Image: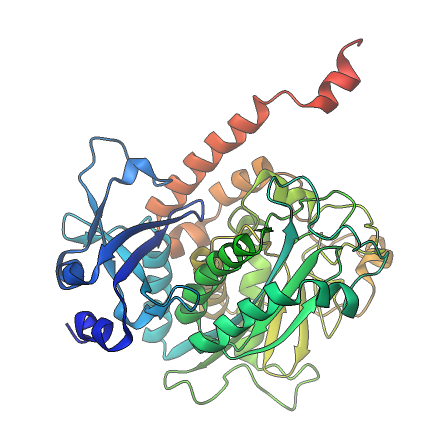
Length: 435
């Protein structure tokens, strides 16, 4: 082993390790391992039954083994006797191709062969609600436009401070915390980095926010649209491609009107080409489509895209270019799988580079008010079913992410859709009992 985790544990006072992986539905799965056994786990991995999680396996499958990545180690600030490790899944001596972290690493290897290195940052929005999930935790948070409201922010200062202190301790380099556009909604920003590191931190951030919220008697939810009248939870990604050494931004061209290079436009073209198909991955729940196809909210805007367009520093488009050398993709929501977010984005971008896909001209209009003037703009799917059908047709994502992952994902998500359609809602009773 390059890193002796038993020695690291002794130096840091770690008594137990959580060896963790994310399944296809984005659920965090872990084994709690005492320090005395961590050497064995590094060699052989922690055993899991794949069928017991959201992976496309049956009880007849052999065990999967989560082999921890020592570079991902995070000592849990609020429980320092615990260390957290992201793991890659293996079965029968081979990586499980239909597992999210493995899929991301394969995309990164594909980029590396081209001398390219993706750096990303994510903006994870979440609501603080009561523990039974029925209402906001702060009944005084009622402003029509609550974004950046200092009073509401400071009423939840103990929670926000503990999460931010934890990020500081973990080296995330957080730089701002704010109350977002929805009542009870917050966002915390930290520095961009290597895409795999960002994905690991994204996974851990969701666990951290939930755990610390629970300590304070609340619940943190990343659900895309927990309240019909409020802004939904987005998970915007800021993207740039660098040289292999990570020193030179390959997206930067100061002579261009938006500050983007030809490589950046090709990458952007790939994302735009596959945007409708990516929806099934970036907006993976039934509830997701209540965010990207939402009517006006209490604050006056949804802040969510509904068409496949890009612009400069204009938040009414699916993609905006806020600064030279990077772009922000605003499509993803809070339920997105952190590894599939990065893997899908890179797969589409690499396809754009390989095929020199043209993103077209940017639009400098308010898409919420003037979108009808661009009838040729592709619209995003209106339901999870539509999105899954589109994903099924994508040769780009099938070739990029692998048929095993795409088939498994669609199969399990279709089961999810059928479960939803079998549910009898109160709306149906109210509108069809007497039809």
